[in-house]
Length: 133
Image 1 (cartoon, rainbow, N blue to C red):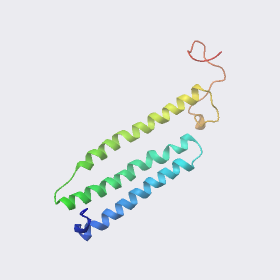
Image 2: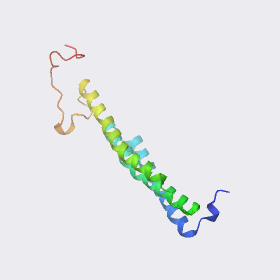
Image 3: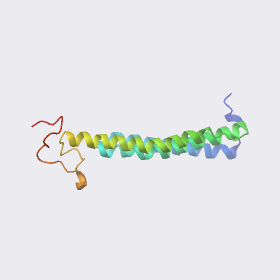
Image 4: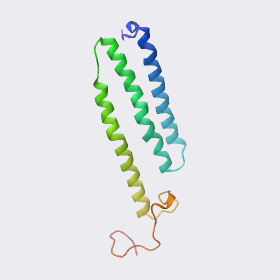
């Protein structure tokens, strides 16, 4: 007995819609991770869709357990706050690490120099440890 048979119809529809919507958004992010060609394009799929897809799944869970237990269940809010605080920071740190790696390796074709934000100098700086002469 999962309790689904006792869930009223007015709660079943929004839970099902939120579950399908959240799963679809996460699937689109995963497909973006697989299909896009460069790292800098691939990072956007999961970085953006994780928060929205997970938010829909958490809302569905919160609604389901609130109706099933006949009391307000807000544990999912703590999870959502944690996700909203950490997901953008983790994505930004991964992107910065990739830019740093590409600049250190002097990879002109990696995408770190697109938009003229970062420039790879032609000659290595003197006195910088780890650079070859």
